[in-house]
Image 1 (cartoon, rainbow, N blue to C red):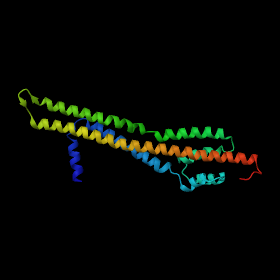
Image 2 (image 1 turned 60 degrees about the vertical axis):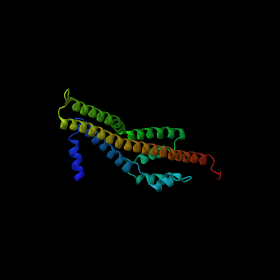
Image 3 (image 1 turned 120 degrees about the vertical axis):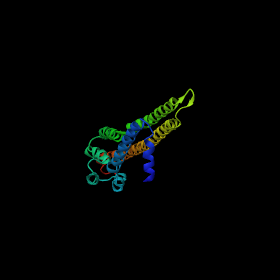
Image 4 (image 1 turned 180 degrees about the horizontal axis):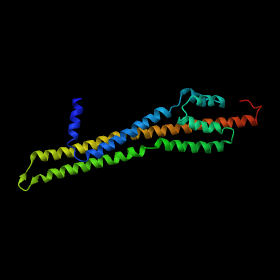
Length: 217
């Protein structure tokens, strides 16, 4: 608690640039919390469903049953449902519709991530601007006859250092979340593509069995 009070006290010496930096920090925090919730709530793939899709010649009715147990807005449910609804159509048709849905999911997952990328760039620049402002304030207190106001000079240096440190801290934190969400997005889309291929294989298997009903594996 004492450390928090000291940190808040130090921010008071950061100058005007502290306010836009804090605004960036709040925006980055809100976006990060929102994306964490999205991945926790809507990007979940139960192992039972994963095993079913990986099973050779699985039943489409079983897939429909498993999808019914997922949240309506679950991204894997959305993707699989498109394939399930069109599984009686030619594979090229299903692949096209699945690709369209995957693109929509990609756009949804990437929504807001650009804000983190902006924070990563803007926070150090604002911190640098605060540094320049603080140093200019310090130099103004150094007259032709030497140091005019030692306390004021110290305050200006403190303003410069605090703004720089805060800007870098915000940028590094935003960079961590940006890389994490980018990695999760890539993993999710790769998994959808892989499992979508399994579903298309099952569609082709159904077509093959209908054409060759007497053929045994």
